[in-house]
Length: 146
Image (cartoon, rainbow, N blue to C red; front, side, top):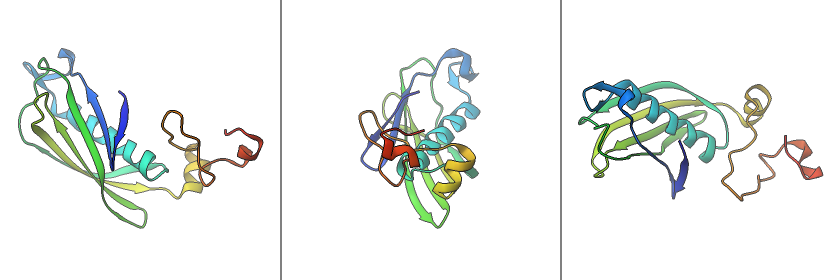
């Protein structure tokens, strides 16, 4: 899976394969949930520059997702943030752009120092971007990060 930014959103296009069917030519609901949870995790890493864990996920299945009709689009963004809790809204749309699944994930986010020391999170940069001073490790002065 590859993720990219589109303004406040993190976006991913993914091609469902037949082995992910729950019913004939239909993407399994559990796979849909995994995909939505994954993109929400990328929102935490990229937009909040820390690590986090899902504490709650509410998923609404609005219409079936075909496995053989083209790539689906996952899109997620921060809906609300209170202290160390982030509410992240995510959608899964079919190849025609119709929303098929909607999720609201509640993430517990770790303070950046704990994310670095316990989860080895450094920073989540896009290609060609340099880590900022607040997310870099102490070795950044020497021109390297760990």
